[in-house]
Image (cartoon, rainbow, N blue to C red):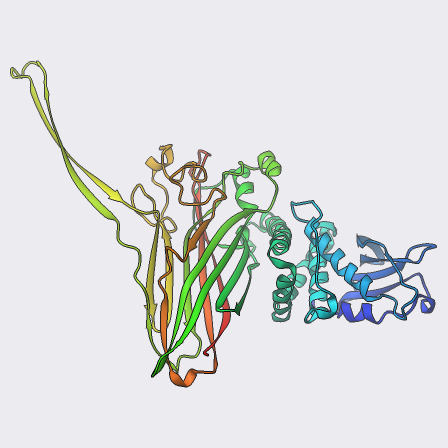
Amino acid sequence: MAFNFHDVFCWIQNLPQISQWKTNSISLNICSSTTSQPILNLTISKIHQSSKLNFLIIADFNGIPINLWNSKPFKQNSKTNNLLDKEIISNLFVNFIQDILHYGSNKNSPYIKFPKLDSVQNLPNIFNLTFFTLLFLVCIYEEPKNLRDTFIGILKDHLTSYESRQASNLLMKLLGSNLQEQWMRSLNLGVTNWVGEHEEQHQNMFRTPCSLFSYAFSTFGLWKVQIYCPAICMDVEKSDNHPTERLQFSLKYHQVESVLQFNYKVVVKEEWVEIMVNIDNIRCDVTKLVNDSLVRERGAGAAEKHFPSRISLQLTPTLQNQVVSLSVGKSTENPKKEIGIDKGIEASIEPPNPLGLKVSAGESTTVSLKPWKFEQSVYGYSANLNWFLHDSMDGKEVFSSKPSKFALINPKSWFKNRYSSAYRPFTRQGGVIFAGDEYGQSVNWKVDKSAFGKTMEWEIRGWIWLTYWPNKRVTLYNETRRLEFREIVNLDVA
């Protein structure tokens, strides 16, 4: 089905005065279909015997209206010539955001404060994106199953289009980091529920849609990339055995939240320009999308979750005709291996050995291995940065291996109680932080002097692997998933 998505902001701005209404409500077909049914309407309605208005989302199926969502009531300002003044439009915008956040696991009403909407860049696009995000969640949770699939896939494609992604970047900055995280958890909880429902219906025939959201910006000598992706939407690279229903529930309701920050500096030499980029902060967390009580009731407990097992980043100047060379710093050192010999003599009276002497000698090897190993490499003018997690029992890379049977029964294995052990390779929340004080050696590009005064473009491409090995549960199930992202950032050579 082909749909056209109307400009909701423009329609609201141009609504006629109530005195010109022929009925008690006015409706807009939100999605105009090439076929007659079903349709979604956004309706503004007068509240009986009052000066208040409210907005509704209504599904019309074969002439039967189904009310899916109501806004808060808004009192019309009689002093303005427009039906809705700036204050009502601002309050409606906040109403959209609040209801989106309420679809998440945090039911507390957050404090929302924005600058005056007059100063918000591209407000119509941001307003429309917010409305269609609300509509997406309303369709997932409120629409009957026989109507739901008609619109959700189309809305998902609309929300991931180039225009919507541009508006999303602006909205994320407007929300700020705290509200942004709540927004993405609410949205990706809806995506997880929708994908999970389809996987149950279609088994292996259903292709999980890519619902990764990332954005980037460059400012004040800083590149920053923010990434959100539901675990259920990541590609499965390997999987052994089958999880129980409770374990599957726990593993499903998580998302990756990652922040990549790089500092850059431009140094002008006599014959060339040197561009230095170093790591400020690489953070990766695996965050619950539902509350602890639900995980305890239906899942295997909050301790069973994926963990980051590899992070791979690639920094590349997109135009390379002015690049002269690339230099990288050193990787972390190889593990130290210490070899010692233990000897002992035992004496006893044991026939048929008349001397009763028993001599034994042994050799032990001790490996000093950090759980995370950092490597830098070069491909052309691309700088590759890799963090690998290793199994401290056998030294194997975790993302491409599976736990040994001995490790599965050994209560002292590093991945047992991995979020509370003193020797854990993660934070207590189950994430990782790589800071510049440990991985701070810069990557340097030498650029021709003719680039001075111009803006150069860099591609930041990356991959994140999540692995599940049993933590407190006794299970043979293990798996690794992977996501991929790509963002463009700018750098002024000045």
